[in-house]
Amino acid sequence: MLTCILHRNAEKKLRLPKNNMQQLKANTFFVFTALLLLLLPQGVTAVETFSRDSEHRGIVDLSPYQIYPENRMGNGIYLDNKLLDSHPQRVILNITSIKNTKSYVYLYRAQNGVLGLDIVKNDADGDARFWKVDPEFYQYTNRDFGIQRVFRIFQDKVLPLLTHLRTGAGVATSTNHAIFYHITDSKDITRTNSSGQQITQRVYTFRLHLINRNFEKIQSLLNLQVQDVSHRLKLKWVNEYSISYKLSNGKKETVDLRKYAPKFF
Image (tube, rainbow, N blue to C red):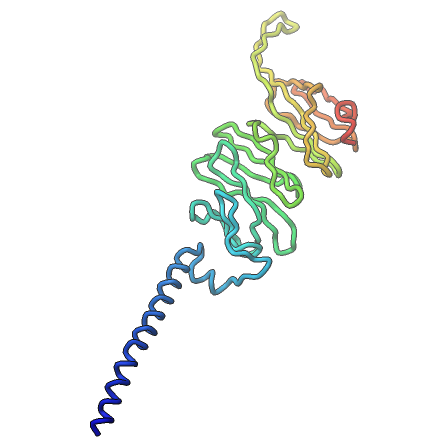
């Protein structure tokens, strides 16, 4: 009997370290899992909803932005660990800031596979609008800050066009081309009318920019100068090669663009 008692005591001593080791492993697993869930942008929901494979890498770093998870319907776009936007029927692919604002434009793929752009508008930017001209071109305007910008979808990318400009606007599109303008100058000009009176008006000078849909490059029409007393210029395609615009005095002009950018046709 004494021998049996000694054996049982020895077994207890051997089991205690083994039990302690198992408990340590369990505690380590729970701590690691908790940290992992805290670091994921969508926490527990993300782990349960999204799995990884060769086409879904998890977090995509587009510094300073992050997309999580990659190539998944309903994913989100983040900045400084803050969710900017997400939509259950969209896959967010890329994002860019709108220069001189606190808002953003992002590229997404809808359920039907069609690409589109949308805006994450910051209330600090005031009276701002964003709209689609056609499936490839979009415009942004901000009346409070006097900013107008043009965006394009090209080769699965979102392209802000001529980002150094503040007044890119007036996009007009045809089957193969697009054209828009920006204001290069504005100044007061005093003229004498037919009655001998002197009239001072602000005159705006516009520069046109031409795009061939097959190429990323933009051709600025440096030798074409348009002036009007209105700060808006409505451009319209007349045919495959020509555009027209109407001035404030009612005069209508037609321009054959092959004269200014022959390589774009």
